[in-house]
Length: 306
Image (cartoon, rainbow, N blue to C red; front, side, top):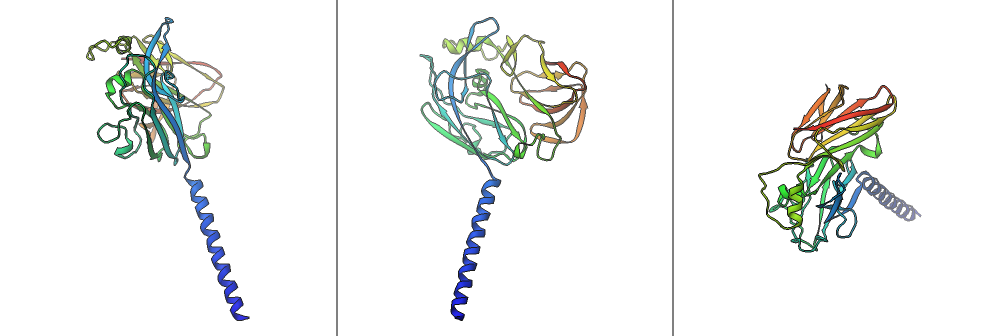
């Protein structure tokens, strides 16, 4: 009888230990979410303000040649996510374009060299090939990504997009436990020299020291120099505005005299928020700003080039 009791107790402890181990595994699995994204490198066209079509290289969420968009799709993950992004180089849809390699560099994110998208330390993705970038998104904030193969040309051709790391569990906070907001807006800025795109499309040589932009872009809007944007807000709403300058020129952001708080720079929180009425972003800089609107209405936003 005593032996039976001992055996029963032994089996009970074994089962309990197995259950606890399984439970812990489940908890840890839920603590680290895996965010998987498929991205495709190809070409395409965008419609310009004059109605003409401009040739671009870029990224797409569609597995189809010629579907590149400008700017590239905004990618969103949450703080603490394990991120896996598989890049497949579909190659160009347009005949006569040289099939070139592409990568993804996640500007400002903490990745190791193999997953950093820089040639010679990270594999170039040739046409017909794929590569999966893997890293953990440790810091909530505003970033961007771009091709790092012949960056001067590939980025200008359109191979850049916003990369946003949000607070955990979908919280409307700039980072987990950080300042709260009601709405958010991304202002991804760049500039376009149409002659570069036409030269690449028709395989003509061009002078890379002669960069004369025709348009200054905000997201997918092609604007004349000095042309502003708008934000629609309700009374009492706080907006988190994510500013990204992936272009070569400086851009100055202002809201016609409205004061805003700068809370983060280049994906990291500032020790103390700074009140500003304008802020200038150099090439590749990012800022997160908070602004509270006292009244409902349409607010003008300027993002002047220099």
